[in-house]
Image (tube, rainbow, N blue to C red; front, side, top):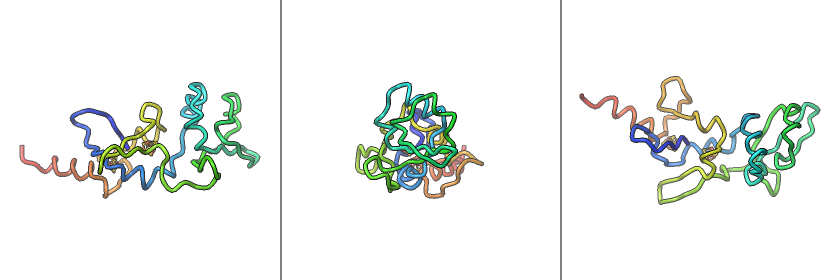
Length: 140
Ligand code: SF4
Ligand code: SF4
């Protein structure tokens, strides 16, 4: 969910993309580094890092100097280690309005998610995409 509070931002904050794609979010090494530096174990504990030797470690236990050994990072339930069914950072703030609970430091792939930009991730159920199409059809 791209939540920039600007007038020309088509995102309707319906939260659908986060509910569907959120569990598959993979943060970049830079995202993880920033979370470690900021002591954001509340975020880190929802991710597991896999090393080259196939061993894994919860990201809350990861040190910045260990990042070079990490080949992938995946979201997991912080209590059970299972896959999650919904992004744990999604917050419902009204009947049909959702916000990202970690907006300022959310993963890079969330920052760049803009289905209304041609060539970006296409998601035809995005209300923002529909709105952008509608606006582009309106007569000048
Ligand atoms: S981290 Fe935030 S923007 Fe990304 S999927 Fe979760 S709630 Fe959505
Ligand atoms: S599906 Fe589209 S309108 Fe809804 S939150 Fe995601 S980007 Fe915004």
